[in-house]
Length: 174
Image (tube, rainbow, N blue to C red; front, side, top):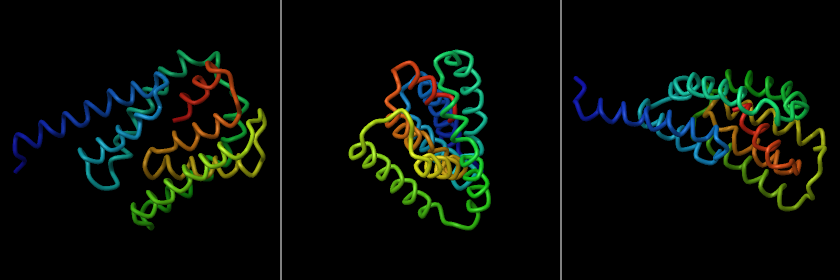
C-alpha cells in the first residue's frame, strides 16, 4: 500500500524535474542534472532515465523551434555517428554494468573535458579524436543517465562559438 505522503512526493519530484527540464532548455544547462536526480528519487532504479526521456524530447522540440537559426548543425552532424555508437553501447551496457561505475566514468569524462578546456587553446575545429570521444561518451551517458549535457557543453566551449550559436547548438541534442 502506498502512503499518501509518498504519492505527493512522487508527483512533486516529477513536477520539479519537468520544470527543471524546461529551465535547462532556456540555456541554464547545469540544472539539468538536478532533473535527473529528482527523477531518480521519484522512480528508483534504471527506469528513471526512460521516464525522463519523453520530457526531454518534448523540451527538445520546443528548443528546436526556438533555437533552430543560431544552431551550428555542422558540429552536430560531425558528432552524430559516434554518438549513435555510444547510444548503442549504452543500451547494451545499462544492464551489464552497475550504475555506480557509470557515474564514475561520466564524472571522469567531465573532469577530462574540463581539463581539456583549460589546457588546450580554443579552436573552431576540434580534433577528430576528441569529436569521437565526446560523441561516444555523450551517447553512453545519455542512455545510462541522461547526463550528456556537461560533456557536450565543455566540448562546445572549446569551439569558441558566439553566444547565440553556443546556446542554440547546446540546447538541441540533449
